[in-house]
Image (cartoon, rainbow, N blue to C red):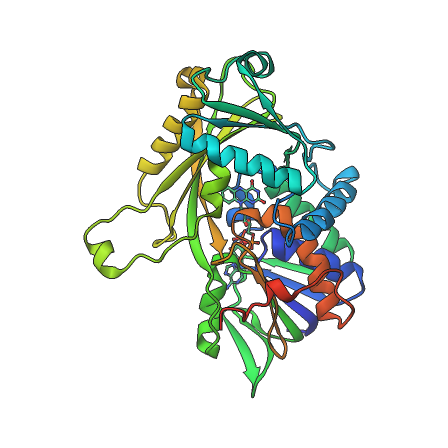
Length: 387
Ligand SMILES: Cc1cc2nc3c(=O)[nH]c(=O)nc-3n(C[C@H](O)[C@H](O)[C@H](O)COP(=O)(O)OP(=O)(O)OC[C@H]3O[C@@H](n4cnc5c(N)ncnc54)[C@H](O)[C@@H]3O)c2cc1C
């Protein structure tokens, strides 16, 4: 097969955004997706876009916002992306939750985002269907809805129009190297030689690195979502019950001993989206993904229970479906972006915020791969920072 300047392995939001940025800068790009585009977490997440409160991640998210607003203003395929935030209602059921929500409000304030505490009447007026059995409620003036699968397709399509070759159902089987330099990717259609491989294979990235003796601690964490069809609109804001804290917790590995004894490691927290199509999508959970295919539905049931606790009217809403995705987690909830070896660049480990960070990641990848001044400090994202 003909060579490319860059081969991107993985057709999720990160791979597609990188293909878009690199192709429109004139690089010859081939993107390999072993399945369909957005087959991984990028097509299976809840589509929350909000600026993070981590000052290290904020510039990257701001850069994503700029890219997504541009791309979705005139997209090559239909993509929903709220032009303005619809707002997020954070609900604390008990005193522990309340302390966490107050911390979140303080962090949001430091990041320059507005948050206001609601009294019982304010909560009732804002979202009458939300339970009144709460210890505290806050309104954060952030949170857009994005259709993440459609955004991934749109970015890949724009990359294609800029000259990229998009190959789906073609896995990168192995990375080729000559000495210490990575020189291409082995596929079922032959070898593709290139100057740079960008590894954006989400939680599957580590499997391609192991034969080269490179280890980056990306761990898969499964998250469940459930889609419901209430007969009438129930919400107009995002609703969260301690979900942000859940996103921030590190996913510890499960030992064989714990596995053999059936130790469960599922954390559940509620985040509820009033979808533009009138349905409700509720999540989410976090558990180590030991098998790529989902084992059973008990976590999905618990997610539904958690959502019903916040929004009691959901109990009568028909279930349209439930699905899970696997987040590529890093131990510090910051992605791995940077050179692993000559010819091999990492763009993975975006955890719970891959959509929020995808566009900004691509802008950084493009600058670093092309040897230009990075638009933001890449040091916190060094893929070899854990040794
Ligand atoms: C339930 C849930 C809710 C979430 N909610 C949000 C949210 O609201 N906002 C947000 O920003 N983030 C959210 N996330 C996180 C977000 O989905 C991920 O961070 C993001 O999708 C990761 O993108 P990625 O491109 O790195 O990985 P993936 O989407 O996993 O893409 C990797 C791709 O690589 C392909 N691949 C793997 N191996 C190979 C190979 N050898 N050759 C070729 N292709 C290969 C896979 O098939 C896959 O398509 C959520 C995740 C989950 C699970």
